[in-house]
Length: 145
Image (cartoon, rainbow, N blue to C red; front, side, top):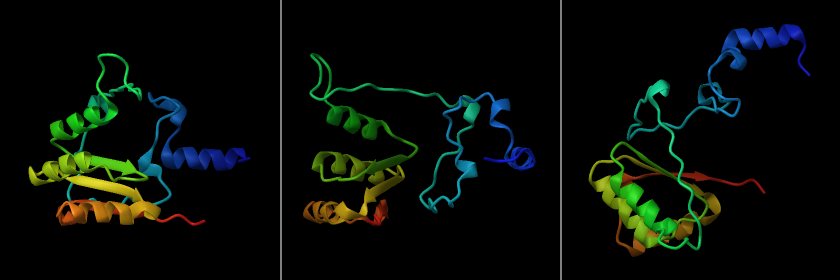
């Protein structure tokens, strides 16, 4: 438990979240305890007050007259123009991978974060497709078991 003096010091340094307009569930990356990776392909600067939030609720198997999750993901990748960031434990879907490569070829920065345990499967898939992944940025999370 923090004493009153320590709480005041923290609030003075980072501000009081209660005073902000954001919800209590907001993530504050500028106050992270680790540095952000170097995103050398770029990352769009979007003012937080103009940011629009969208939520898509998908089901598997899909409901009648609804697209599959894979179809929605592929469409989102095809439409992306600013940046694509993918986080997966296992990424071996060839069709989605081809969409990601096409996005990279049209100049959309692509970042992929994978579980280190399954990265060999991803690299094998890329090699089987004859794709050189130098135009993508691959980040790997190594588990400490």
